[in-house]
Length: 239
Ligand SMILES: [Zn+2]
Image (cartoon, rainbow, N blue to C red; front, side):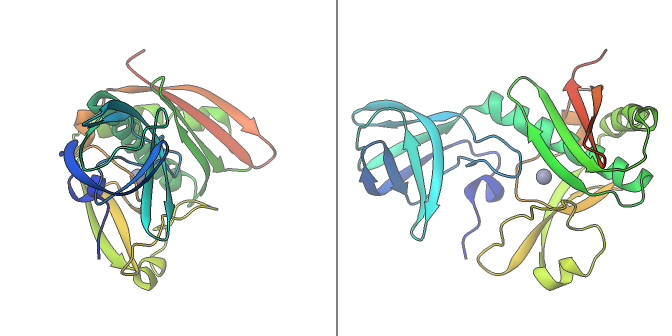
């Protein structure tokens, strides 16, 4: 059973890999540090260096053999390659993603188990989360900014563990999204991400090691998206 490198070795952002197969502009690798994107988190940025030069990472798609990595141009790299994740961009995604969990937990607790209907992290240092929240006023959602920043100041540890899928499904609130659930791992287990004392939920993305590594954040905007949905937009940095 193999778990993704970005989960098993979140600090190892540069790794050598072997090209197992290739086609113009894409390679199948034996291992890779790149987060391919998913669940509202953008794919990593970075590059691959091989004997023919360096190429920018452009995304990945899986088939039955594994993850095909796409790179700029139509070279066909081969042999041993060096893969390097853009550390600043990864950190930004971890920061936004971790704060999305914090806000998600606060909404879930304050509003009777409200579920997420959408989430998107952005490269500009903002994210938005949509919730199924009929009849909730904007002021009570804006009021969550203070406890969100309290959770950052509290520097809560973020850890992960695994549960069998049936076990996870039996715990209320473990699957927080109305429509999307994290991809099952090959052994039928589900990854659970825990923010100490605040939140536990199934997730396959990348996160900070503790909430104190995030900057304080602001709730920028609350929109109504249809009768049921409230969209909360959050930006990093103090007001
Ligand atoms: Zn997550």
